[in-house]
Length: 202
Image (cartoon, rainbow, N blue to C red; front, side, top):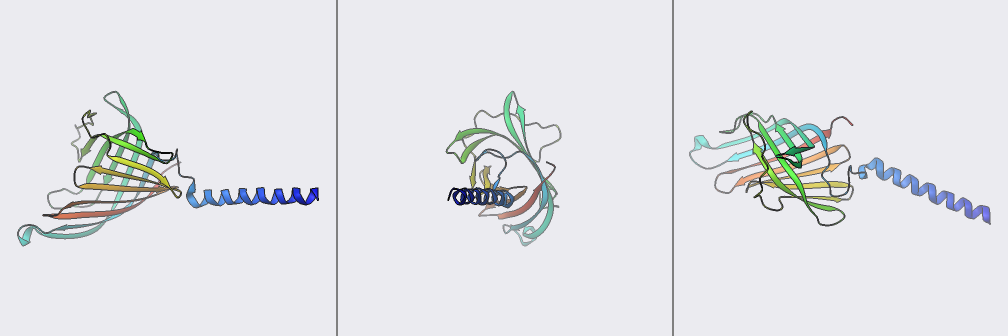
């Protein structure tokens, strides 16, 4: 009897270990603590739709296009403050009055841990398509929260509002990142985008 019980325990322990291994291989080992924005570099491809409906027919446009995109999230310092630096680059091609690239540089700080799985972030600096001479500065007067980061079902989902009309959602799972966002003006038009990126390096 003792041998049978020992054998049962061995089988249960090995099945549990195999189950945990399968979860890890399935991507449930989300990098970093739960609810925390992961750091690293990602590269991939996106697709956007641009619709502009205001004004004369000549100024109206409908554009659908694919483009390469990169993302970097790294710890850094702005005006003596420790921050997370988020850099986005989209080589999206020309759009009316918008040039052919989008470059976003943001500085974030952890503002509040809501639970074991969710953290709120404050956006303390933002530059859109900056000139080479422009640098991020730490803004003491921004709203207390502009982004949330939640770990759920093996993925980490980061949502951020920048400006009054733009939202981005990042979904990190293992080495892969799916990103979607929108900018809209009910009187003039909209831009919607979706991207798939893969982590670069280790």
